[in-house]
Length: 436
Image (cartoon, rainbow, N blue to C red):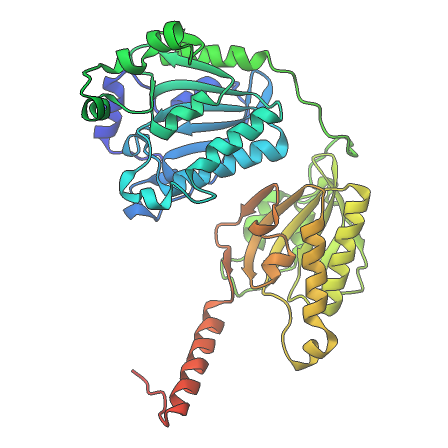
């Protein structure tokens, strides 16, 4: 994901710029973890030319404080915003809002990628959502720092414009709604980058930027000093005990979860390699056995767990709905471990009310107010995705095992369904399906 054409690297070096990973290394506290979001975003889109969607986002430790980081990658198409760049950035800011985390923006962008502007500009979750989320953070009293390391053009200018603190690098940093060529075309005015939106103008004339810096290293050091002034966030009042490693080695998960999506496995074995001391208090172990429910501790925090061990039947759906309500009542966060083929279908189960019982589980997930975390261990098919807190149900974080799949149904089932529809269509015309 970090491979770049040498010409792009040389271009940044000639401008005295650091690569995005080098910037992160300067910003983060040494030796601390960085939880990166959506690292594979866009890797197979746009002809593979926009790895990581052209930005790096995640949660890291800066001056001893957890912050969300949104860093443009100018080595990818000059840092231009593609539709998936916008989606990834919006998601990072959603996480900042949900978890009340400050944000550090490392700004270096050519602005929106104009050939695809229809896919990134005007709709509800397009580029405007970035700025709306920034405004919500401000309303909530959650601080933002922008470090202007390159150009912030057009909509990108509003990222520092809506931040609480702005640092700008002299000579390379610039903020303007329209660059010199567009100003020339629109007004006939000849103006340089520095005159229009450079460091000295914005720190001494417009007041848009607060701190000048002579280099990227200095700018990032200033940002670290700013973050050091932030109040340390108060942790949620939830049950906690000293954490301990699982009794069973988590590395064994690589052998427990098969590569073949059709091959089953026992989710108890996964839980045993995730939770503290491998201790798990299972709820209703003899009822609704295809859905495992119970309590454990993860890194010292008490959690509820729902894990699939097969298709969801009526009893397992009702069990899941009730357990979610119990966790919500006790203010216990929930971890969903997905390996779900969906709710059971067929005449017998419809007569038992599988639609109604499944709806109860979906309603419980939708109305749950405690933090939810979803791990896609294998398949996630049909309405089972909904009942197990899929993306639409606002889990705080969603993690996916590399071979996991999400779809309405599996490929074989989809092929059989489409073939059956075609056979029925041809039968009405007095024809039969022939093999190609």
